[in-house]
Image (cartoon, rainbow, N blue to C red):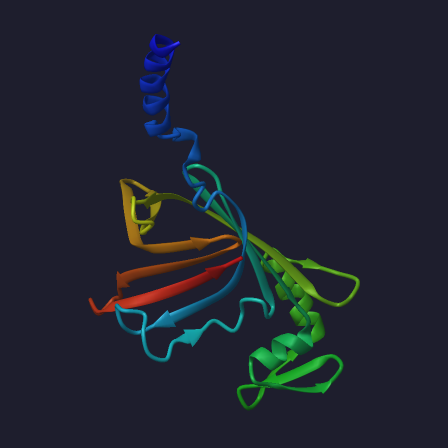
Length: 197
């Protein structure tokens, strides 16, 4: 009995120290709803940021992450009246919006523009657009739980141009926050914070 116990104890000890490779984080994999996008004119994401009013206004969006590819799906639903509000205009009647002082946009032109821009005119008098965009990404979480997130865009023209932007990611249950820091056209750092749920 003692010999059996002496043989089994080292085996149990070795098995209890083994790490389970199957317990890796899924990170961003899955479909997320874009809750907000906020822009900061600095590289530390601090101060008063400018939140994009279009997200969860006329735009709704999701991002689906697979192992290495992200696909953003945005939908825009806009009536002449909501377009007029966004342009800081005034509806003169049910079919005419006046904005920028004296620019008139009538319903028939709005409908024509909707089709010309690839939208669909619906029976409820709204123009609906669906946009998709894809990019590759990396998500790496270190042993302390800090995650680095990078988006990789390929522009396949005459030459293949690769653009990579990186930042950090915090994934906690059903929410995620992405902070992307990059240089603007004036070579100054700016930050974009994207909240997902």
